[in-house]
Image (tube, rainbow, N blue to C red; front, side):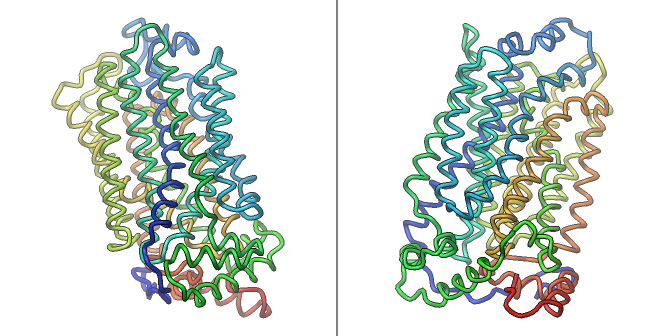
Length: 512
């Protein structure tokens, strides 16, 4: 039971299901959307540390770097246009996510993933062929639309296709692909930085075409989810798909539950307004704070600007890119660990442990930089530099098995069908808003707060530890359409929202 501090929660009815090849293949193909998302996050930090890229698009930053000691170590990359190159993607994703809510509900998860793939392909062409800053930003905005549609559809697809007992593991394939995309971006940046002739950055940006095409092909190949088909009135097709993905003929119990969820969903004319009802506030509050805290761990400050950050700390250009590759590898390992543990240890344990480990890393980096790194000279000796890399690796590894995948997983599994698309839209929108904020502000914050930036993020990590400890229920192993009865009605705090609302509403409103 999710009583006390929400420590545990019983599983609901576990419907008969096999782990079928079509589920595994569909999830792998769909999760390639995460590959593109991760590549977009990682590639920007690498190209913004390349002299040829800076010389062409950001000459002010380039000239500033040519005069040693002119600026503080913490301020050498402080430029609003440079930050806009990175952050514009997330502003577009924020806007696109609300349009994506409509397409996922009315047109299905499959078609929404196809739209994302097309946006990714066109945006990649603009970026690789960019001749000026405007063309570069347009490309990033198109990529952002792809992120908005992809991050809306893919987590929902994975949660709805997967059997409940392995839903966490299959859903985390998305985050695993994000981390692999990050790692590939760092490796490619390391290689393209060696290219002579000034076109290495075009190679880095252009190779985003590979995951873009993968997602587009994947969207054409996969079947839509039975939840989506039934919600759109395609009952026979939905039941046929349910039999295929579950690998059994007797799917009547699950099919009937999906029908009831669909009936309730049809009664909801405005999903976004319905989200604000008292009975849906627990899910909404949990989702908003999970996305807020995920970004204020400081992870994307490191993901976006890892090479820039390491150069700031005194690493040479090659060493900074190499260090970014190492940290990217740690995040991939973290995601693999999460796939194994999410449906065994549970979501809460991983989130709590991850928060503790990230807090230790933030405090450690703050102490080292405060004591050892001077304003205008690189005085970070080899031993301290290695220790910083180790602490950053510890940070990204723990994020990789906790807040990275689980913030997306939990948000995709806690909403009832009638508000699921709208809820996922809010998830993506909130995440992209704070991602945009961090991307746009981090280099300026680094310049003004200096080493204190890590302590700034550490404070939020401590607060989110308390948030999970007291307010987040366990969702491991609970069928997705039974969350309300099994999780929210049993939680020591959130049950008052469900019970009070049910007392006030007439029957027929559904069990959201």
